[in-house]
Image (cartoon, rainbow, N blue to C red; front, side, top):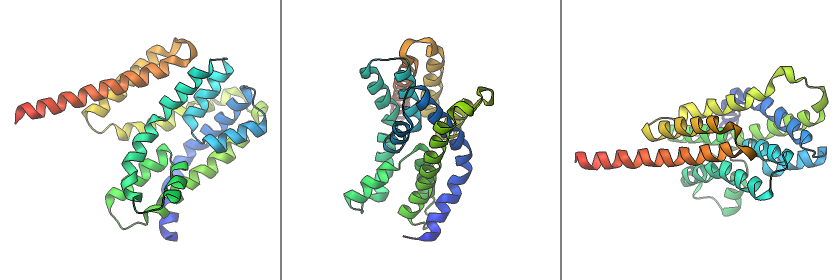
Length: 232
């Protein structure tokens, strides 16, 4: 494994960690607020390692939502990982299944976005080393900050407004991803519906927004393909 590529991954991830840190602290606080013990909060952070779904699940557990709603919400939020995996898999095609499974555990929005961008630039970087550098840096910071949030739960004043870090991190990832008509339509429609549905019970506004956004994006893509076909 090329050490230079690993360090490059760490360096590229470093600016994003500024937003991940408060995100992790919020997740740690939310875990304790939901009634989890410190061990359970740390265990969830290590095993699940998925910030958005962790927060959504904790909120639903805190509200006493049915288990089916909790599970469906987590699955829907993490569906994007399926697309990330399909997109990045060709770059790891030559590796053993065990290696690919280990890499999959570390897959996050940030690691995917940085790695796929670097791979497409075709600058000779060691793909696995770069990915591990970026992904493991985020993993370490995430675990440290969630533990810090869980331990310091009672001592962090709400006036700090750390929860704002969560949407800011995702906005930083979303905006560059809206690079063509269908993705722009999906982002705008899904986001608008999710905001309008904020008051729905059991956080269903998120599920409805995600579903409508996906459908709108697919419809826009289909329309573009039909128009292109007609033009020929």
